Length: 127
Ligand code: FES
Image: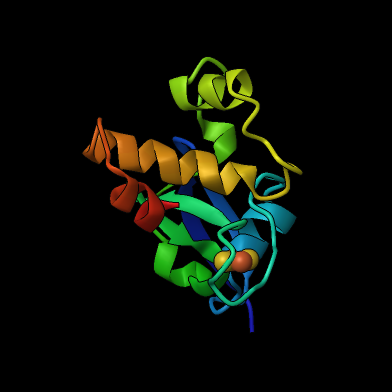
């Protein structure tokens, strides 16, 4: 059964019609067209689906869309083109195949906000 869900994505209020248990990844990617929020493993291990949920990295494949209502959702599309993490990933050729890189960029953004000079253990844990 579907419901009308209100979400705040990249500083924009949106409404979608979806089953409240639909994974947030599917709602954001398929219904809102934000293609950076990709489905990889679908079980919370790969990070390809990472979004910032109230500023914290979240595996959106594991979050029922209804639980994201009235929370601040940020996807890679919500970062400015000149965001320092994005610019640095390009400058350092850190893109590998590119499929999961939006998740890495968001996880690194949250890490550097909380720990501007992280050590290897913090980087391992965050990424
Ligand atoms: Fe792999 Fe969500 S798709 S963690």
